[in-house]
Image (cartoon, rainbow, N blue to C red; front, side, top):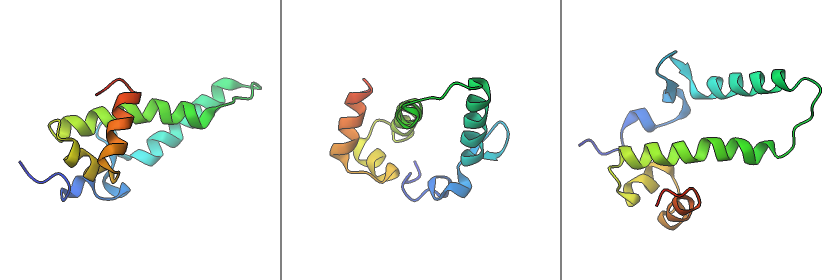
Length: 96
């Protein structure tokens, strides 16, 4: 297996793409947020930051853990976070 930490596909947002459309991840998130606000109409949301982080963090952790074949040290390095932080986040999301 290639060392996931040095794998170019995980380096920098320029390579983070939605494979179905070839769009940078940032653009996919922007489009989703624009659709969300368009559907709100005059309603003003609250707690948006927590909602977005909650929607993104769990699948991010699941995907990276799968990519790292369950190796928390490797997954933490890929994510750029401390292994104990990763364990805490996995527990928060019921993933570990």
